[in-house]
Length: 82
Image 1: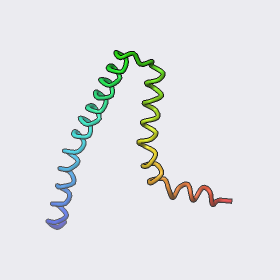
Image 2: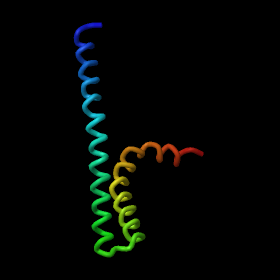
Image 3: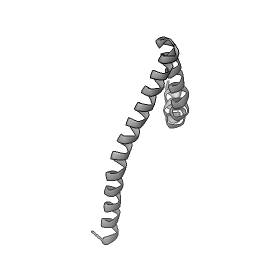
Image 4: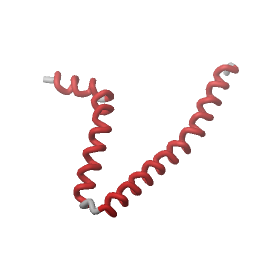
């Protein structure tokens, strides 16, 4: 192996070593934020089913553009099959 390949592999391993724990902390931060917002909404008097409806609607609106973008070729293939 040449030196460039070894350096590239070290950089990838270093990036994975930093990104994996950082992503876990980020997921926990978003979870805590959602829990705090839920607690605040319940303290104000929001009904649990209304909160669930708002949460599902917000999640669908957030994820839909990514789904349409990343799945755009899969749907065209499924529609063109006889």
